[in-house]
Image (tube, rainbow, N blue to C red; front, top):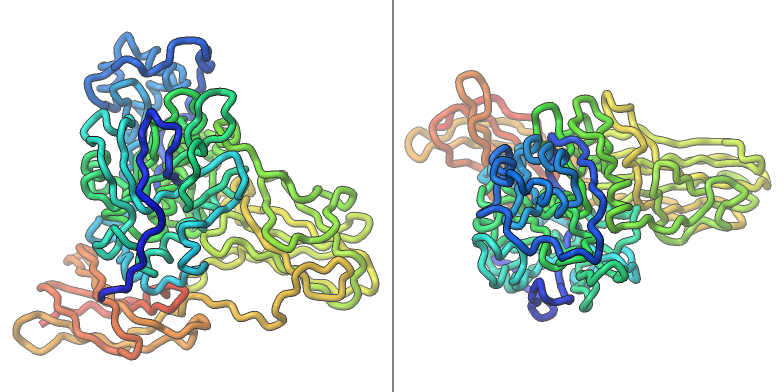
Length: 609
């Protein structure tokens, strides 16, 4: 189906290592490695010769081969990465995704073992058509998470020219790179593509919400990205989000490669522009979750983070509802980690390293007790920035039923919220921390509502980030950080924004039900017919279409291949699929303006005819 397109805003830009003006950015996906936390060597003397002026290797290499090729220059390579020689060896031999380039700089080439094969990846075009854009179309390239910050993460989705960088030293020549594209026209952005960009921005901004950094889709002015030296405190990084197959082939190679980035270059004081951008490749994985997780993950490498691995695996895929940003996951709750889960290969403190390699924390909005509480709840977003951060806000004298709701980020919240109502002595009168769970594919319980009936009594509300279930099944409060919005319902002197007393929350629809599946008429082509019934829960928004997924099974019942059919009209309740010979089972998904439902229960196994 052809879509109406809107021209992309602004001129193309050039990323050139000799210029201080870079117009690009980045912000998570997959990765988590087997290397222990690398020890950091002392930073080189600023007066010493600029590192990286000579070649140490004929071509990028990894593993034991890189160690052998570096030989007597191992110490020199380690120093160029602010590592000890032992840490560099551990990194190279413990994580198969790590490479050392010709000049001895470490980079990560992320191959995501937990993603489906490219041919079976989510159909992002259909997902985008059903995705509700959270902002007007004309704001797509003007989104900011913290305008005025001296640090910037720029999500560059419309492409540009990459020249004079470390990426151009190997097989990628200086030249133009196309941006994110779903419909085969990289020169324009359709409404569906803009919706994807907006939600990707939301998810990346939430990952970096604890920090004083502006995650933006607007091209920064000159000097906002590049860093000229120690005295320059205005700098950042670029995440190039591109579907350019030429760039993917030259820089990443394997179709399963989702992103590439250099280690510990975010706050580099020399050759900063040379190691830009971080790459998030979308030629094969172009759905919202894959892009956002890749961006945050690759920017994490720029901020000195290695992988969260598991046993002998480079990446940890997570457990229960939880997964680490520096792992490889598709879990509903994705957070920064310090390797507290069983079998972790590193106890690297993500948050501490981010804070010491370029991103200070946001300013705190409120004190942690009633003596230092803020005078009233904020009208807009507030933030939990560390596991010790508790925000307390005065509600003033309250009478009658009082209800305080804390809403977390709409897209992929990192913060699991607990709310408490306190009296004038600081004692807790009521607490709310709902069970976090996935209900029909939708994450619930990250926000909270606490209620109490009082008679002319001053109240305070305390906001804290908490864990869920402990590490055997869930997570603790380490990475439970991010944005929230408070609303107060009741008669209180310092009332915040009053919510709609009868709010309507729009969600993805409930799963449909497969009524029956049967072989088609004898002959060719081989077909199966399927019928389904919609869920009574449309999520508060009309169903906009259906899609049918077919899985081919082998003789043991294992899935051999999975494929998803075209988007079907909302009035449809049956369809016929052309399939090859074999045994198949079918499931149906409903879509509305908010997204896709969970899959229906699988049908019985049937052979097409």
